Image (tube, rainbow, N blue to C red; front, side, top):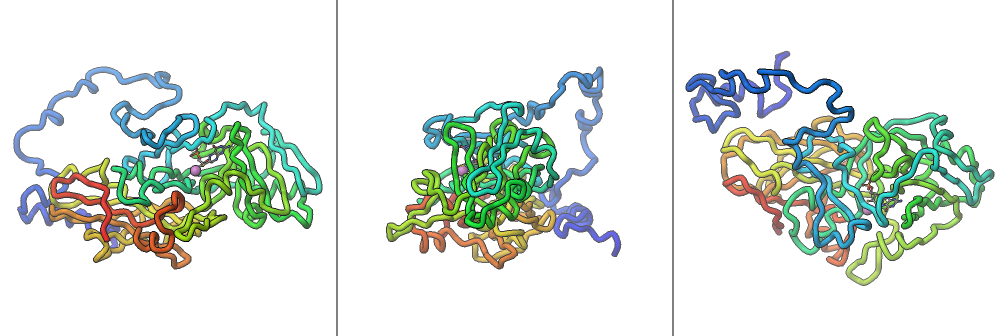
Length: 423
Ligand code: MTE
Ligand code: CO
């Protein structure tokens, strides 16, 4: 039939059938229009008795005050010092896939610095034919590309290695954001300088005191790396690297250098502090994994979750979350209601995009009993997101970074949800 609803379990027909069956209001997601008059409908409301705000009231808008809870948050014991710390994206309260800049997590090693476009310089030197310095105005004259990518801190979910700990998707999985970037391909700029045959790596650093220097193999630098100056259609916010940051699709957030000031072409990796003492993974035998740049496929149910409990009774409900892979596109997400014993394929809001967040839904009719909710992502390489136990078998418990194990939320009959582990 041409009017077949796209959404299997929440079709209008499904709702009406449930209502006609008289199976109590609990089986429907709406209310019968009969009964006592509802003053919210029958009374002229205050907002209809006068004028609203004029168009000049707020030249640049903020979210309405009723959404004031949708904000970045810290974990107190993690935030040793706010200038060298991290906060978390409220993924439990966002929808779709794009993260607004205003609530996208921040990670600074020495605080967010303020710079003007006029003061901005990008130097490319080292094993190049012609070292060059670009001003912001220079960068604006190169051909641009637009693409959406997730940026995930390697430490995302790092506090969960020892067991279920933080109560909320914001805290367990919120070191991630997903923005539409506009910028110049790094390949274009490296073509300008030329690369000597010995050039095999680049070393990228920021203008902040920490400089956050990292090495990137030339192959990646010439592939999909962007020198970006717009995010979600507007200039980068100060905290995300205004006026220019590096975008390194699919690779750990630490490589996404903000306030980008220098790119040196080298013959070897630089072995900076950020890639020797940090951002390596200590294995059970005492050795460390190095150069773990790619972010493995991962997913999390954002609602319901501890900060987003179920606030209605049995009947239709939306189970939703995010999935992503640093190796390419998400091809599918499975959802389990019973801690991983049985799986159902979730509906992707749109086909998975390269190295970007994918929104998934399970349109479920809840019987009101408790659930052990899990999501499991699959990507185009055939990789399937592992359980936490599978991950620990190989990686041990000493790691901080690259925890992409399956998350479990215990949703109780009263709708409250808790971070737990099942084995
Ligand atoms: N770049 C500079 N110059 N200084 C920094 O402290 N932090 C890095 C990276 N780039 C950092 C930086 C880390 S660890 C991460 S996870 C990302 O930026 C976070 O980007 P965001 O603050 O836009 O979320
Ligand atoms: Co980071």
